[in-house]
Amino acid sequence: MRRALVLTSGGLDSTVALWWARREGYDVAPLTFHYPGRPRGEKRATREIVALAGLEAIEAELPFLHEASDADAARRQSRFRGAPPGYIPARNALFYAAACYHANVLGCEAVVGGHNAEDAARFPDASRRFFADLESLLHRGLWTAPGVPAPRLEMPLLGLDRAGVLALGAELKAPIDATWSCYEDGEGPCGVCPACLQRGPASATA
Image (cartoon, rainbow, N blue to C red; front, side, top):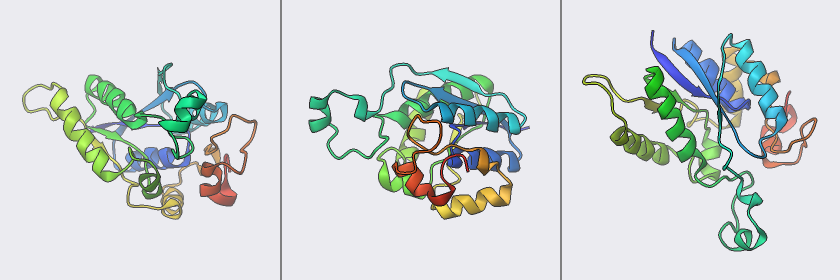
């Protein structure tokens, strides 16, 4: 059976991408990253969603990774002026390099990510061009046996806006109610951060 590593965060997009990979017939290996400031609700959602899929996640620690907003005030005022909320420097380059490590070791032919068209418009490392360039770079750095291709990056949601992702999730019967979309580390969604506003009335774990 074909194998795919799926980056899984507990959010709406990654959950729909996980159910998409299952529909495509992949033997799925979920991978999730823990880093300072990651909301506890996101961690809980990840574990619940992976369990609902009947799978077990690979949990990787990235203790050095911080949002740009955690930088000291002087650096925020200069280097990160105007950065979108939730921006983490080089996040996707790091995530997908680590994902390709696990995919290479596990014999996965694909690494699946749940980035949508609205992400691509907001973050410099979520565009179709970025992922094409990153895939090319990673392929040059991965060794595989003759005749065995390096894992490719698959982004099934890049052509969809949030409404399109919700529609696909409903079609796939993904557990959307179990997902967490809020940037904040509260008991429930804050309702005002960009992720909550983007999701709308169905925010957070609903």
